[in-house]
Image 1 (cartoon, helix red, strand yellow):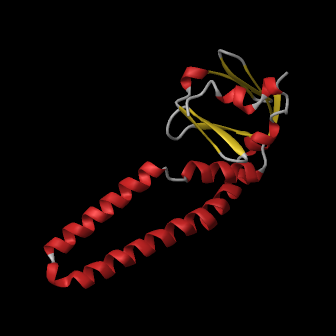
Image 2: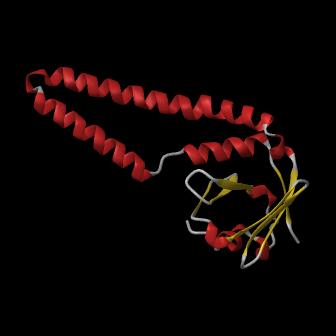
Image 3: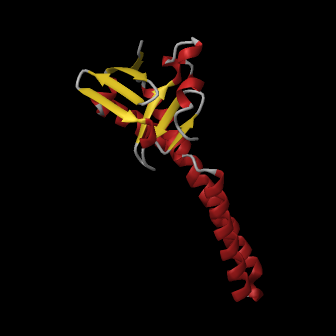
Length: 162
């Protein structure tokens, strides 16, 4: 018995936000580069330490404000707009899986993807995302999974690396 999927705009927004969210590793790399740059600038201009500290602080505040604006305002707005434009996201799909792969059927679509084609997965409270590359993913709203244990999300995601 396949799972029936019909996307909502909020599913797409949630997937977009999850996709855009930075990993802990990325944050640490960016913070490390910023700290290294600040130390290098401070060493080059030790007599202007207060100016350097002010510039670094201003840069950090600006970066945090930019990221917050992008994640809280721009990305949700852009995702809802893209959802309205892309008519294929409004269609109904049937999704089923077995030990060999994931099959998606729709009015104009039939796709089977073997499990080893997926390189990672991400999930939040609303959606599960299966990645075939860093940018190409399939999303599945968690609300579409029936509660029976043999169709649970845990049984499904065991096929895809975290």
